[in-house]
Image (tube, rainbow, N blue to C red; front, side, top):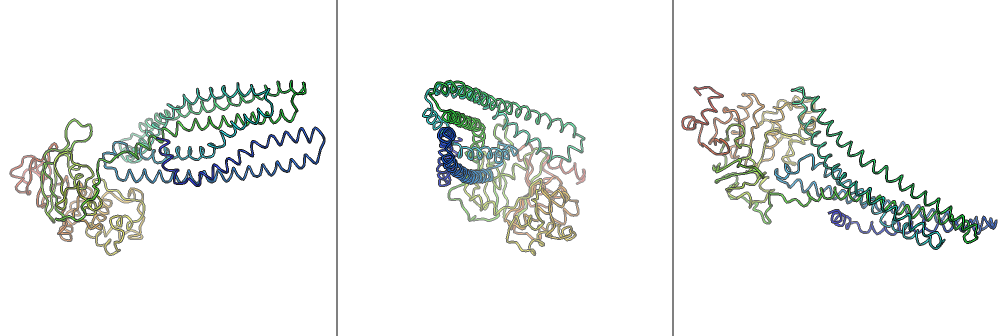
Length: 575
């Protein structure tokens, strides 16, 4: 998967990668050439007291060094440009893919895991791309070229290379093989940390209300400690690796000096040649160390690439039709026929054999006890889930045959937990329709009974909204979410218990304004309060995922025991 992702996203920047190869190749050649020049200065300049030769060769060494530095900088710049651009593209594709997921896939991966995959995991792949691009040429050139140049300098000492390099590789393989499972566990633990942190931030009021701060702190501390232990194990292996490399390098250098000194005494080798050989030994070791460093990065990046690839290759259970229908023959009409739904892995269906219709402009209410399947049922209409049984049609078209964007354009959804984005009141309302005028925003607020509190804000429509709408009350969030759906100008409005935070007076005024101002809009209302749905054209009663009754309030009150129990529990026996 790692290779597949790198080829897919780096191929668009092949010219930058070609520049990396060219300049890194030149930099490596210059690096290999410098020890030979240094040997010549010692053997022909210092040993023979030729100052002129020292100045000429030394000046040439400075030019070569400057060229090596420039080439290295340019290569690193090209590599950074290519890697960062590839990382940007991967993140964009992951975001796009997740945006197309149904709620089933989001629940399957988990929000915390998806965040980690699009941040930390992509960063690991991105870092490998950058480091790999610069080391891909340098490491083999330094290792192989260094061996060739060292052998040219002194064949008699080449046996030291034949011993030290394999030992270095064996050490690297042993340590890296121990790192791979640790990297995999480390990424999974990052998911756990993100999940716990997200839960605690989202549910901070509940945590404080039940005085669970210490328990939550302990839960986070335990997960954080596991991550720390994994990081310490990985760090220990890193710390162990490089001292072992340096030990092998230094022992090799000592061997070169020892046995090289013997050859110098015998007149077989000059001092400059010995110095050059030692420098080449260092370059060979550096090449092997760079390769080992790459080998350490590859397993971690491979784990991250696998996790990113799972998201990129995950197919949404919500299939988009190739030529989806965009023009609905009966705008605003809704029909469910023998609909059933079962969550993946569940033993029993959440919904079974539910059928009802809503004609354009009608109001259909859905009531039932907690866990009756009300939210799941209305999620099938905008196709947040696909029904596992039966047929759902909107506007006279099966939702599976409709163009998804056209389907969503015709529906305004006010979720059970209204969410506001960071920005202003106006930007949140225009989330439904960007071109909406201020007059249209005020009109939507007036229908949603939110005009008064928005006018009371310091800057009106331009007043700031904090992330999640935490700087406004629950009732204000609900009214802003309703106004946002109205600005959207849908043919169908779905309210998932969207009046629960409103007092009875505001609830009644809001419903009257909706019925009066939007008579042609079909309204699907899920509500816990009977007073909210008492005037609905049709009331669907759910019990245990099964429809046990349908009709108007007065009819159900006399014929449906489940509905009567709900009414009596709220309004009394005489209701």
